[in-house]
Image 1 (cartoon, one colour):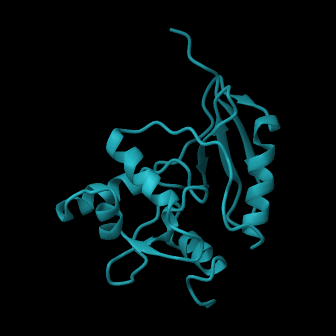
Image 2: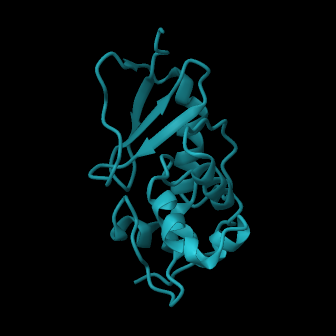
Image 3: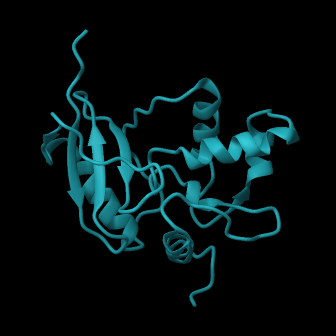
Length: 166
């Protein structure tokens, strides 16, 4: 079995250098921030090539400047069927809004007892920023966990107007 090559590039921004990866088809497969819990790092044999990432780079720059509210990128992630359902539910949380882990569980038809599993799937989201896991907060309104760090979650929610500037 031949493994498909992984292409990568980094994009500078206010949250630190963002590591983007894609397969040969150019679909974005991950976006990681420095120090991210479970984030990717450049692997052996990966090919640095900014070419497949031009659209992602342009859209990320516009988003981080407060000029873009919805990403229009081809995404390709690989997760369990449950994780993919959770990640699809994240895609439906609009810019500037927040939701809770319980609301995500309800959206995918999971029982209330599945809130922890939903949290685990959200924590495993390979596409930070683009797939807006930062928009998920605790039922009490608290800014609970974010693989990229709570400072980045706060920054993103403030950018989107979901939090008042500090």
